[in-house]
Each structure stands twice: as structure tokens, then as C-alpha cells.
Image (cartoon, rainbow over all chains, first blue to last red; front, side, top):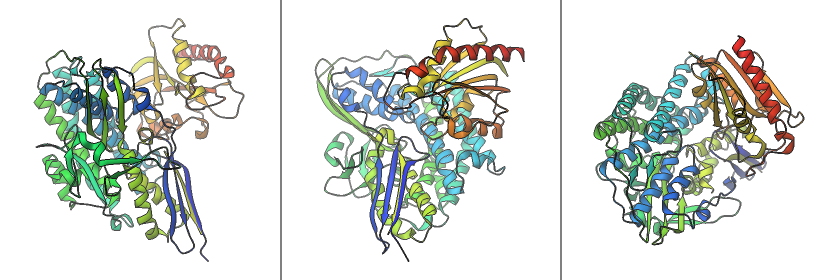
Amino acid sequence: MSTTRNIRVDYIARTEGDGAFDVLIDSNGIVKKASWNVWEPPRFFEAFLIGRKAEEIPEFVQRICGICPHSHHIASLRAIERAMDVKVSNQTVLLRELLHYSDWIMSHSLHIYYLAAPDFLGYESVIAMAGNSDLLPIVENALKIKRLGNDMIVVLSGQEIQNKTSVIGGFTSVPSVTDLRKLQDQLKKMKEFAYDTVKLTNTLASQSPYKDLSRRCEHVALQDVGKYAINEGRLVSTMGLDVPEWDYPKYMIEKHVPECNCKHSIIKDRDSFLVGPLARVNLNFNTLSIDAQKAAKEIGFTTPCYNPFMSIVARSIELVHAIDASIALIDEIGTPVFERPRFSYKAGKSFAATEAPRGTCCHGGQIDKYGVVKKWDIVAPTARNVYNLNKDFEEFIPKLLDLSDEDLTLKCEVMIRNYDPCQSCATHSLKVRLQRE
Amino acid sequence: MDEKIIVIGCGNLLAADDGIGIYVARSLKEYPLSNDVQIIEAGCPGLDLLRLWENKKNVIIIDAVISGAKPGTVHVFNLNQVIPREIMPLSSHSFNVVDAIELGKILKVIPEQLIIVGIELETEKAYREELSPSVEQAIPVACEQIIKEITNLKRI
């Protein structure tokens, strides 16, 4: 006799920040309610930035997150620079890209090996995984590759996590060519492991039931000219969106919803959408590094891929790309030369976007002629994805009703972790509740 | 192998008593310590502890403890003891010092001597900066305990 099933997880593990999910299934197997609730308290960043000076904004906003600080930092820098008409050198553009790729390497490796892989391998955590001697080398290398991301940030910015050197107009100090070359050697050493990771994650995501689950939704990402978009580009989608990044407020619409500290996002006149590695790989496959494309082709990855459980594979493909791109950037930067960052205040309004490890990160606002911020808008990628995840729940849970409550709960958690959510950023975490009638 | 004694304060200053490890690390700097003692304020490092203690011989961790003891109680653990995982606070990715020790042992990235000085908290309420008086009064007690542990480590 079937009964109501209510799956509720009040603290979703292995994600950043605090969130919960709640699923109610009636006796006919219909999903009556499926929601991911980000309940991390709002932090009012947008409000307390009002009245601050423009140069303080990139400093403050990189404190939003410990895992993607530079996604916020660079988006805000670029919005301010566009508003105040500040031009930066090519070296600054390249150093910012390298700085942001360090976030990608750190964040992608943390997510792939530590947060997501245990789900697919059936382990409670990475520590249990390390207890298996076959998997131990993976855990050891995972630690090394994540550390490499941290080391890159130290070289580029003088300290771990948030940077001290990147400001409006450029950098207050630049790394030495010797330190950059040392990083490059380390990146070359880690490349093979990243390449093998694509095969590993593909094997994991291809197991039942994941390989048969797919849902066609709009995928959105920045698209740059001649290179994989990370710090700038046009906003494009699988459904024909193609607009300048600074027009994001016109096309990416946010609305408040009850029970959730995070707003829901839709594309104007359409529906929920997905941002992140899967969307980027789908939209920008041809600008991935040659070896990242090769790794994808070897496993038979074809675009567009609408299976959200393949996001761990997309993330692995991007890890290869991030290493290749960083190696190439270090060559292109050569011997960095100190250039004094210069800017003057000018009234203006603008918006900009970057591609955070977990998706498109939007910043922008209005500055007066004294450089005082009058308004500031921040939309973190997880905030874009919350509504889309709720739609994944509605689509996939009815297909998984034969599973036990315990297994179904795990699958719901995996669906959330597919997004590598940063719930702290989005509030603007994870608990699951499954209820069956 | 780095022979220095590394003292790592852990905690979140924005979550009330959870920040106690950082407060103790800061107070420790007021004590006359020899040059071979290095103090690190680590925030909530989770598994990053492995990176902080790699190649270090002697390490002391200061962190909050939630065991049900009287708030302000100073606990001392070492590597030979089994520390119940649930009494140590978690990082935002749900890892804590016990996880770091367990993974460190498997990966053989573990100091020869590792002491954990834990201070029982009263509340880990988020978005509160100050310590509870019961926990604040434990700061000098914890510092004295750490000085003792440093002296012991030097003898080994």
C-alpha cells in the first residue's frame, strides 16, 4: 500500500552554505511539492555597498565567497571600469584571467573529487574513499591539484583566498616570472591527472540511473571571441539569447519566492535556465583547449548535452581546459611589468558578468561623479540555478519513485550537488525532506 | 621536516563562541614565545589543515568543542586519542579537524606530534561577534595550557 512520502533534508552536506530540500510525493506517485530552499540568512551586501567608494566595492565583494572570490571581484571591477570609463592594459586582462582560472582549478577540483565523487562511488565522504587503496592515489592527487589552485592565488595576489593586489585599473604588484614559471611546471605535472579525471567522471556519471536522465532547459553562458569565456563576453543561450553582458538585468529576471532566501531567476518571457560548466561546454565547446576537446571526444561527449548529472564531466573537461589555459597565459604574460593602476571618478552606470566556477556571476550599478556608489546589484550563479533545480526535481523524481527513501534522498542530494551550489553566495545550503503519501 | 612548533587557531569570528580558537591564538601572541613558535589564524580550514601541517613536526590546533561539558572547559587531546567526530565544529563543506586527522593518517600527511586544545563553547549563534563571558574567561586558561604543551613538545 503506497503512502505519502516526504523526503526532507534540513542540512545538505558537501555544499557551500546552508540549504534544505523538501519533497512531497502523493499516493499516486505525483510530486506535489519539490523545493530547494536556501535558508542561509541574507547578508545584505547590495544594501551596505550603497554610499561606499567605487574602489572599495571589489574589495568587499570578494568577501562574498571563499571559493569563487575572484568571480565576484572581477565582475565588479569590470562593471566599475566600464561605468567610469577606465581602460586597462592587455597584461591586466591576462593576469585577471590567470587569477580567475586559479579559482576554477581550486573550486572544480574540490567539487569533483571531494564533494561529488563520493556520491557516484557510493562513499559517505572523501575520507571513506581514501580508505580504499585503489582510490587512494586519486585522493592524493586531488589534494595536490586543489593546492595548486591555492598556490596560484598566492603567487598572483600575495595571500590565499581573497587577493590583495587587484584593483581598479590593474594590479598594485605583479608576480615574478620565476614564480610564474614554477607554477607552470606544476600545472604541466597535474595535466595528465586532470585528463584522466574526465574518463573517471564519465564512467561514474554513465552508471544507472544517471545516464538516462535528461531535461531540455535553456543553458546560458558568456561567449567570448576566439577564447573560452571567463571574464567577459556576450550572454548567449541554447535558445537564441545573444545580448551584451551589461544588458543582463533586462533579460535575466529575478523574483522573490516564499520560504527561500534566494530569488528565482527566469529568462525574460521564457522560463528557468541553467548556468555553469555544462552550459559553458555546450555553448563554447569550440573554444575549449585542444586537449580538453580531445578528452571530451574520447569519452563520446556530444553537445548539446541536457543531462544535469553530466555536469561533473563538464567540470572535469573544464579542469583540463583551465590547466591548459593557465599554462598558455603564463607564456603570454612573459615577464610581468609593473604598471601603476590609474583611474579617476566619473559618474556612470554599468553592469558586467564573469563565469564563476559554478556559472555566470553578475555585478553592476551606478556611481556618482564623486565615485560614490548609489546602487549595486549582485546576482551569484547559484541564485540563477535554484529555480532550474526545482524543475529538475519535478522532472526526475517521478522517474525514481521505485527507489527506497534513503536512495531517493541521496539522488535528490546528487541533483543539487550537480549544480555545485554556493548557497552562501546565493543568499543571498542543504537539508532534504521527502514525503510520500 | 620543519622543526618549528605551529599553533593553528580555528574558528569563525562571526559565529559567537565558535571564534574562540582565533581569540586564543591572538592572545597567545602577547606571551613571550621563542622564535620557533609560529601562530596561524586559520579560520575554518576543514581539510586545508593538511596543507597547513604538511612537513611540520609539532602542531597544536585550537578549536571550539561541543561535547556538553561546562562552557569554557579546556579539553586537551592528542593523536593517540580517539576524538568523537561530532564534538568538533564543521567547516562550510562539512569537514572538521577529526576528518583532517583521519585523512592525514591515510595520506601520511600528519605531524609527528599533534595536540588539540579544545574550548567548550556556549553558543555558536551566527552573526554575533562577541564571546559568551563563560567562554571568554577560558582564554587565559587555554593560553597557559598551550604554553605547557609547547614546553612538553620541546622536551620530546
